[in-house]
Amino acid sequence: MDWNTFFFSIWPYISLTIFLVVTIYRSILRPFTISSQSSQLLENKRLYWGSISFHYGIVLVLVGHLIALVIPKSVVLWNAAPLRLYLLEITGLGLGLWAVAGLLILVFRRVAVRRVQVVTTPMDAVVLVVLLVSAISGVLVATLYRFGSYWFTGVFSPYLLSLATFSPRIDLVAPLPWLIKLHVINNFVLAAIFPFSRLVHIFTYPIGYLIRPWQIVLWNRKIKAQKIN
Ligand code: HEM
View 1 (tube, rainbow, N blue to C red):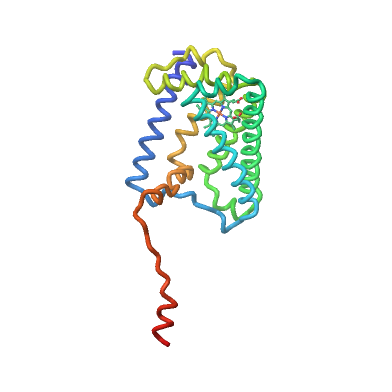
View 2: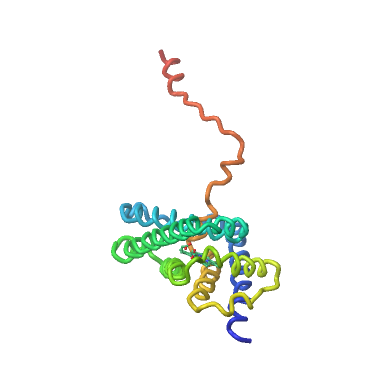
């Protein structure tokens, strides 16, 4: 078996199986361990700038990836006009750089602030390194192999969908430069370590608030005061 076969037709399934099984196990059997283990009380200023930049940058970049994966034809149509293609590429790159800047602040904070350093676990360090490799390799791919938003739709949309139908199209990814391969392989590493890390906090986003029954909050201080009078 050559390494392309391993990394692009076996590793994604190992990674996604670990992601799903361990995340479900942890959510059902150890729900109280699902947390971001915030260190905000230990240091807030650098956390604010790092966290805001990283989260906004990376979430918007990932929304872009998702759009290219789910509706590739719309992205191709959008890119048909050069001005729109440049706009999309520059926006993606800008957001990627924003995420990298945020991550670097977060790494610096973990290393430089003693109180934060003390509560940092080996897994926190692993997560930061893997995220850095993801974000920096993404930015390098966008810079060195330009118009990725265009060729993503011809290479990765069909490749990722072929994974979903259990018939991986290695022929699409095997000829790619190593940097692009590193970006993809590392993202499956990220998926595999996800359930063992504080990244699981992503699932604590309070979506339940959108569908739960109404809650009526009554303020009764005035009523009590009136009764006393
Ligand atoms: C297997 C899934 C993924 C594939 C196939 C993929 C592929 C790509 C490609 C082709 C680009 C270049 C886009 C362009 O030039 O416009 C890119 C950029 C980027 N990727 Fe990914 N990516 C994946 C997952 C991720 C994940 C999970 C992260 C973050 C944790 C990430 C972070 C980035 C960043 C920061 C950029 C630079 C910003 C941009 O140009 O959009 N990617 N990715």
